[in-house]
Image 1 (cartoon, rainbow, N blue to C red):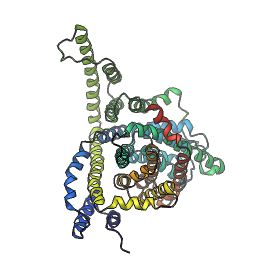
Image 2: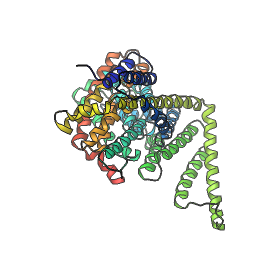
Image 3: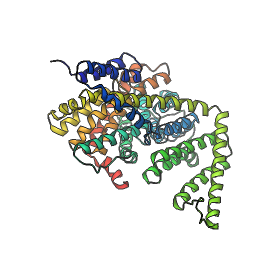
Length: 516
C-alpha cells in the first residue's frame, strides 16, 4: 500500500524542518514541489493555485492579525523597561521566607508578566537571570528551580492577551465557518478574539493554581527541595508591593477590560496596550511623573468621553457647546500626545526604543511569513485531497467524536516535540478542527484545550523554546539534563490541566457565555 500524496507532503514538511531548513521556505517549497508532482501524476489541477493571490491578500488585510505587532511591541517595551526585574525582586522578598515561597513568587510573576507582555522568551530569560540564581543560593533543587522558571514563562501563551490566542482565534473562526457551510448553514456565527480571550482566562489561572499547589506540595513532602530563603532583604511594605504590581495590573485591566467589556476591538485594545507600555517605559526612564500621569489620564478620559458623547465638527449644525466639546477633546489629545512624545524621547535616549522596535519587526515578520506560506501549503494540501483524507481518518477513529478528539490532541502533543506553535496552528489545525466541530465539539471549549496543548510545546524536548531560552540564561552549573528533568513534572501538570478543562468545560465556557 502506497502512502497518499497528501500525507507524503505533510511528512516531507516535517522532514525538512527537522533537517534545519528555514521554516517559511520549507513550507512554501514543499507545497510548490508537491503541487507540480500532483499535476504530473494527474491528481491535482494547477489552476487551483489561481486562488493563491486572494488568500494571501486576505491574510494581509485580516483585522484580527493586525493586533499581533501591537501586542508584541507592548510586551517587548515592557521587558526592555525592566518591569520584570522589579516585580521578581519585590515578590521574592514578599514570599521568599516561606517554604517554597520563591517558587510561588516566580509563578505569580510569570502570570502577571503573561497578562501584560505575553512574550515567552523575554519572561524566561528575565527569570532565568534573576530568580534562578536566587533560588539556587537558597538551596532549591536545581531541577525544580529550572522547571518552575521554564513553565512560568510559558503562561504568556495561555493567559490573554497572547499571540498564540490571536492566531488560534482566527483559525478557529475560519474552521467554524467552514463547518457551518458544510452543514448547509448560510447565516453563520463567528468566533471573536474576545471570546477566545475570555475562554482562556480561567483555564490559565487554573494552571497557575496547579503549579502553586505542586510547588507547595513538593516543598512539604521534600523540604530540602524548596527551603525558605534566608539571605533576602527585609519584607517589602504594602506601598512598595503596590508600586511594583500596579503598572502591569493597570495595563492588564486597560487591555483586557476594553476587550471583554466590548469597549474596543482587540486591535484597538492592543493599541492601548502599546501606548500604555510606552508611557510606563518613559516613566521608568525618568520622564516627568506628572506629565505621564496627566497624559495617561487624558487618554483615558478622551476614550471614555468620545465613546459616550462623540462629536462631528464637520457637520453644518454644530452648536457652540459642540465646538467647546471638540476643543476639550483636542486639549486632552494634546496632553496625551505630549506624554507619549516625552516617553518616546526618554526611551530612545535610554536605548530602549530601538531594540524594542527591532525585536517587534523580527517577531512579526517571522509570524506573518509562517502564516502566509501556510496558506500556500493548505491550498495545495486541499488540492491533493488532503481534507477528505483527514476527514476519513478522523471519522474512522474508534470511539466516535471522543476518540477523534483524543487522537487529535495526542497528535498535536507529539508534533509539539518537533514543531513551533505557529506552525502547528496555521498548518495542522485548519485540517482537523472543521471535522471536530462537525462532530459536535464546542469550538470555544475546543480552542482552549488546543491552546493548553500548544503551550506544552514550549516545554517538550528536544525543541521546546523555553528550554533553549533557559539554557542560554541559566548559570553554568545548571545542565541541560537538569532542565529537561525539571520540566517533566510540569508537562504532566499541563496534561492534568487539559483533563480538568475536559471534565469541567464550564471553566472555559462560563466567562465568554456571560460576557458575550
